Image (cartoon, rainbow, N blue to C red; front, side, top):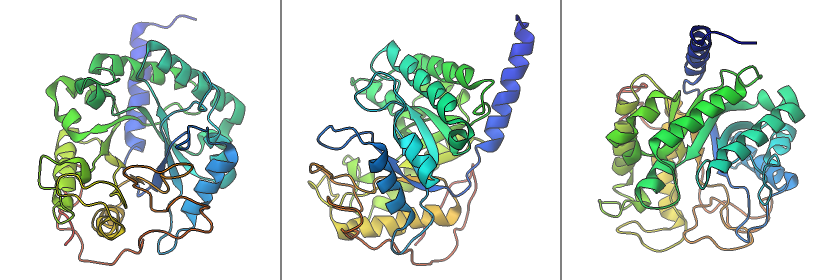
Length: 336
């Protein structure tokens, strides 16, 4: 059946408005989960479920019941549904879906095929867990750095394809965003991307900002400087913190020293302050070293069985005074 372009435009506008309304920060807490181990072996359903269950039962904290994925595709396959989906259903873990769009035009095609297959195969047991969809991850940053990424117009096309793909499905109206570094969002050539998404995903790592003061004593200022700039750029659109953390081991980068002690400070200053403000947060990382040693290693847990090894630092949040300002478009003042 043919529809007039005006009707299609109205439908798209209504869907986008619904998505924007549902995109507001709601205090979601979770972790980032890769599709494979360091030895390149694909994670299976049991692996994801094991990690999700560990995250739900952390000593000193609670409520870490969400998973951010980078891809809808099972590692090592062309377009099979990632086994994190049945694991999330099994463990009642909410999902910030990710679609990997860099590399080739086929990437978004395969990702959408896997997304549609997941909707068809798992139905509402899957779709009811989805809190958002990220089209791409740091693609603009990599493209500007001469690495494998995509530019703003290609990214906007991918976003449009995803909106069309979920129209008429139970995921219609799901808020769609893009995850990138704050300097990528600040780049004027990328402004059109912000106009086409419902939320912005902020990746912030003071550890890597070696051209600026980035010791653990400077880390809170570094983080909130980038976060507040992203908030200002976002206008009325919410900003999620989709990646941040501090390494427990690795090389000194600028003035940033990797250690469990500094990771604990960073958790208290950043994770605890964001949780207190109800900002959606996906921390990096629950466990990075498994079947290999990450360099640097951002994992809360070291390599080994997650049910037998202990966290490398305390996850308790020590209370402090409420923030002086808070809101979607207002800058956030770091807790002291």
